Amino acid sequence: MGCVNIRRSSAEDLPLVKIICVDLYDGQDYVPYMWGEWASSPENQLYLLEVENQPAAVYCLRLGIAGPGTSWVQGVRVAAAFRGRGLAKQIIEHAIQISRELECSVLGYTTAEFNAPMHHLAQLYRFRHIGSFLVHYKSSLSLSLNETKLKSYKTANLSQLEQIHSFVISSVEYKVTESFYANSWLWKPLSRELLAQHLEQGEVFSLSEQDELKAVAIISKEADLPQYWLSFISGEEKAAHQLLTELLQELIQPQPDASLNAQPAETPLTKALLSSLNFTPDPEDAVMWLYEFRL
Image 1: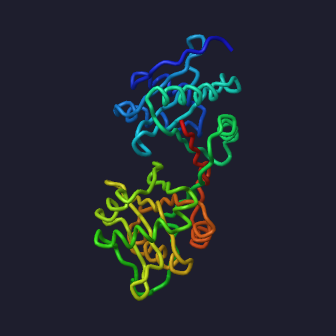
Image 2: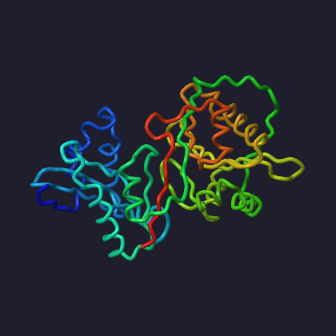
């Protein structure tokens, strides 16, 4: 294969990153768009792999993004001319080595369900599959909700932290991913502190009967866009369906350009909910697998 050199990269390498990613996702790969932002954070380490002085592969090692003492592999990309030569394997080995040198306790990554090479590497290095997440979308243009029920959901507040936290940690959707949730393509454990932040920001919604919680959802919004992220939903199926239906009516339907991006843990409940409300699976990443490696 020739000599492989792995070196730290920076924003200045963006032209090389574009060369590596040029044929991915019809030229719309997100990695070149994110490279400058990743480079601007001291918690990210960017790496470029060169083969015989030619740009061959890249990846980003993100530190602390899934909690203290964690590292995270993101944006693994191998140029078309260098695929099949074991460069992704070298990336995982390098990420493990650097993570150990930095005294991280755990290394993680997510990959699409169809990405066989990354699943093979997970098995090869004994990463644990700790859960899967759905990636589906719903726009205001695709809504056909005609129900006229009175609003029954509530925006939960910080005074309900203990009740909501107990409900969340007892749920199948929390347990099936060992507490991880996805919020705007960031995976991390849904801690009590993070839940409190969502409550403070008015991003937790609940549906109750006689003061007993029946369903809970976490939905956040992009700062400057009518774009929302459903990162968690759990409860009795009928109540969860009603809650999500009402949230679509209240948050998405009134805004012509609004969309709801759903990234909940994959469970029978969430699959049934998104299917019954006609969410559209992401064409490339409809299901994401989460892997973890204890260092």
